Image 1 (tube, rainbow, N blue to C red):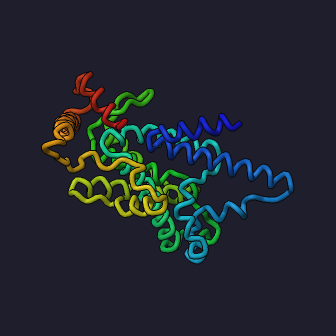
Image 2 (cartoon, rainbow, N blue to C red; image 1 turned 135 degrees about the horizontal axis):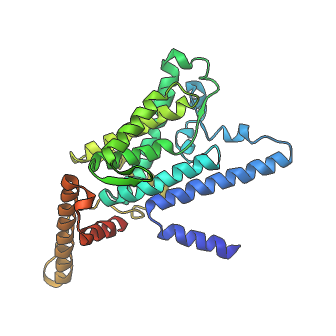
Image 3 (cartoon, helix red, strand yellow; image 1 turned 45 degrees about the vertical axis):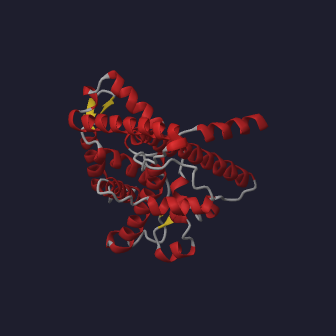
Length: 297
């Protein structure tokens, strides 16, 4: 058993950031499921316990459990709910790392979840349609966070094509449009809270990507807060376009290394510009390989 735990720990340390979130979400799901089974064996319900981790729509209830604005992002109703969100996170997480850094993904996961949760609470307390449900509704799941990551990629590379079974290649801008329109049409459905939070997450993803093009990172405050809490300021990568440090004299090797890194960065920028203008299919095999390798760093 110790070897299994050690292996999981080592895999987690070596994994990319989106895989780390998948590990955490999966671990939380099975841990809560086991606790629920254990309580049920003693004729006790786990619902009252886990409600403290779900996000309530009632403002007064939220004031008693403000941490739920974070914890709800890692809770899932059932295995299908978890599986769908994690598959979506895996796919778009890999795409995200082609265009942005691991640090950006970490911050955006939380930013998207926060935006989704706040819009959910706001909608349930503003619109009369939800008056009868506001004291009994709770939100859980990573959907808002995953939507934020998906929309950010679509804003950054709208012409990027992805292949769907039975459909073929579809540009990201159309995929994003379908997701947003679907959620808008479903905000009065049985899962109204979920679809409203999706829209909040999408808003967070758009805000991140559009602000970053202007040189402003809206996830920086989240990452600083996380760094402060975990006490490790070098756990995740910084932005890909970091300032080049140059040394002279006895540090000649460092200078040459920086020059090579600058050339590699310029080449990636050129490939990204070509991707944005012509689409993924027009990249050469070598250019695709360089993009993939850059996304893994």
